Image (cartoon, rainbow, N blue to C red; front, side, top):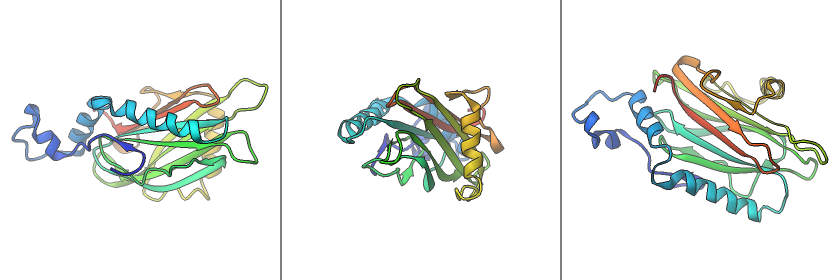
Length: 219
C-alpha cells in the first residue's frame, strides 16, 4: 500500500466473494463502485486516514492547512495527473500516486511563506461509467485571513482525460470555487458528467477537513 492510501482495494475478486454477485461473469464498473461505496467506512479505514492526517498536522510546523480526504468509489483505480497551488503547497507527504477503488487517499495541504491561505486542486486519471478515460478534479479553498471569519469553499467536476493542465482552465476553477460560496456539494448539485458523480465538503477552521467522494451515478 502506497503513502497516503487506506483500505483494501475492492476488485472483481472482492465481489465474487459476495453472495449477491456469486456466479456473475459480467461485472461492471458500477458494480465495483456500488460495493466500494457501501464499504466506505469499513475496517476503520476512514479513521486510519484521518489519524494519518492529524499526525501530519502535528508535525507540519504551521498553523493553517487543509486535511484532505478523497474516497474512490468509481469502480476503477485513480492515478495522479496534475495539481495546482493557488496559495500554499502540499505538506511533507505527497499526493497519493494511485487510489484504488475502495480506498481513501489522504494528504495535507499547508500554507506557504508568502500566504496564510491553503487553496489548491488535484486531478486524477480514471474511468467514467462506460469505462472510458476521464479526469476527476477536486479543489478546496481555505482562505483564512487573520482577524476575520474563516471562508471555506469547494469545487469538483469530472471531464475528459487531460482536460486539466492547470494552464488554461485554472482561473475558471478558482473563480467557480470562490463564487460558489458553498462549503459542500451534495447529491442535488454533484457533478454528474457521463454517469459519474462527485461531491465534496469542507469544514470551517484553520485546519478544516476537506472530504471528496468520487463515484458513479445511481450506485
